[in-house]
Length: 128
Image (cartoon, rainbow, N blue to C red; front, side, top):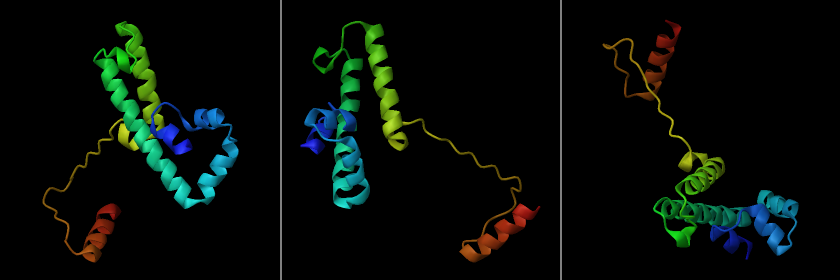
């Protein structure tokens, strides 16, 4: 029942616990101690977050069934708040993308395909 409520996208864990009359500390303890329960709840959270993301898309398109108010400023606020929550709950999927840029200061230098040789070459480069 708890997992179903979270997977529906209508409740976060603390809200679902309160609705069902569960003590959230006991649920968190179970999450820490029971791997099967933790896996089930992680799957439910993933599903719930995807439902929320789809709802945001619908609100952005003006769908009143999804919760669009018809006022673009209010809808923008709803979307920003929900997107912020998605970023916090699952930063790898919904957070800002991290861009890594590497620069080769020695353009004539090529790393070996052999991991041991590549490690030796890297340590020489770091010493420079």
